[in-house]
Length: 352
Ligand code: GLY
Image 1: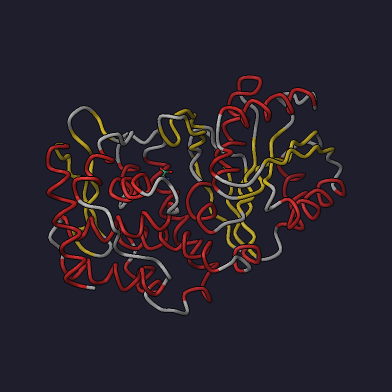
Image 2: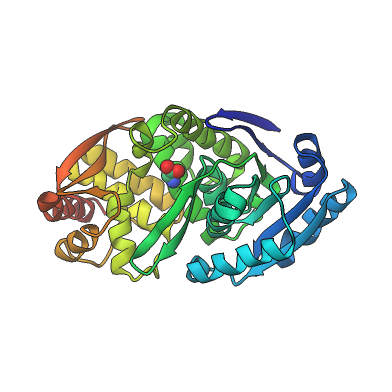
């Protein structure tokens, strides 16, 4: 088992290993006094893992109540959050109790936000059940819900007290969910870790799931410790996201986030004029079952990118690769976005 320790406004451990889910209560009892736990999960994860987690909570002297919401991004809204908060109040949760987020990014983001605002903030614990949540959203304390105007537009920074990533749960995921998470792993490789990147270029990458999660979490941990509130170096984690988010938006969010990021990273390399990096990102995407191109025009994509929340005034901070393992932030006038989409997409077309 691996242990990564993160020191930010709150210090906490991220455990990564086999069989953690059935011992969740044991880990929690070492950290928190016996209390009441609001287990928050979705309709997909509930039948798979809720009973195991709840049994372990009970065996370790915790009382628990379970809130289950319909799986999917469409639930990540103010109405589900409101139901969640009312549920927590009905359970008479106090500040010495805690929320346990059992699920993927939607569950973690929403349960974390509920924990951030309920009683002006109570502790929460993350048990990520997707690769994407394990390597990204469960670590670093970003919590949010979507508004009609855009994804993640209302939220708070609220660090978890503990993250338990059970690698057996991740290894058992269907191929599509593994691919979605792989995009974020490729991202860490392009940002800082050429060896991790090379693992993702092999079709056997799933054999290294524990190591892949560890290397990704270590990179994210360092960025969060340096820039918890996302004002500087943490922005690097947006590699592929501005371009990718525009693609997700043009597809009316029928394309998953990971798929958008995968294409977005290839566009970023093309936009930076880096043919070899673009070729290698396409190869990694292919090995991980991810796409590298899309059907939308540069004009449509640039228009969608204009409403990105990462835009500040008339510029957007683009993350562009210098080489595999090194990237830089380029403040870019939004008026140049269309040309950059065009440059990125044409290079991808030439290489595919
Ligand atoms: N998902 C990017 C971040 O946590 O900053």
